[in-house]
Length: 502
Ligand code: NAI
Ligand code: MG
Image (cartoon, rainbow, N blue to C red; front, side, top):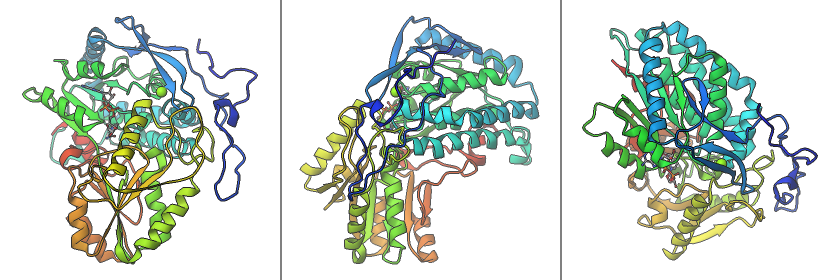
């Protein structure tokens, strides 16, 4: 059946990726600590997951997914065309009408709990495949993505039989078939964010993962199959933007949930206008991290590092703009520069790695384009001098000072490890600057004063504001944006209502 892709007789060590030994810039050297690949199972080829079975695509077409740290092919994946999407939607409709909308919430919960447990049991395998397919550091996939994905299923399993308590006095009803399209930055976690609330509320699903990172969603399909979830409740179709558009335009879909670029979000919004389809969009961001002079500076610098450099900056809520109060600007800048010198860029499977591979060649080109734009606009660039591997898609942690509010690097989403730094004097000034963006997904505030936190959080046009921390997630707290960051909320009670008629 499934073959393992790990080459026998070749130890997965630091050199196995062609990635050089890691160097720590202050003269220290870390011995490589690669995560083993021997426990994972990958096929050479993946089919579509429709009606509980893995089936060959009617299109007859396949595409490759590569490891962005090595540029090597990992597997071939089916490319669904409009007929394949139709087949998946029919399976989802059938499962909805005949089974899923009829069974009690307590029964739905059992399957969802089971899926959560199975993700936990196979957490190591999921973490390694996530890092191989998408390039993120194993520390992130192991400690963030996979546990949060399992938590999300666990959390929504708990709601499945309590919907009338979630919305007292109302009779919540499911919508039907949900079409869900997800991006490449959190492949398994985004699948969990989409699937868990949808099926907990009695809907069925057709989900499309991103073309560069389809593997963990397909591994999740294996778990779904093993869990005994009724056939057709979750269908997973792989492909490019066209496959996503085929889902969006299918007449028998009741709800579209999308996470990805603002550009595609707008296309989807237009396509859905005038239909009965419900929609949630989670789009880009240009979050501000704000450091006041009274903040615990070391902690704040660590939060800024975490907010923009970890996960290669491939985070919609990444703190990509930093505002520092003038009186502490020099010291914060010094600390930031010192800290990025110590970040380790390299093999995503090495447990020491802080910054893994950029997800794709295209994304690396986008990031480099913005670095050049920043320089041309007159901002001053500083990059870590750390070594980066000769092969694969990598980017050094980068920061810009001397940034003007109107600069493109301060206005547009870069989606990479690039920070734009500005200064401010007063609360009013920083609120105005931070809000001066087409986006409004998240923000961070660093200060010793509770009053300042409350003043800022009420005036910031951002869906989430973190105080003295950054990028903290929990399934019970809603997440989503203002303005061009999209609309609708995911997570928590709000995440339930996105899949219900109340
Ligand atoms: P994208 O928006 O093109 O891709 C996201 C998903 O949408 C993928 O599954 C893709 O196949 C699908 N898709 C593409 N075109 C579609 C269409 N016309 N109809 C339906 N589905 C479609 O994002 P891309 O091109 O990979 O990244 C471009 C930029 O988008 C990034 O540089 C970043 O700024 C932003 N982005 C934001 C994300 C977020 O979490 N908010 C996630 C990924 C990208
Ligand atoms: Mg890949």
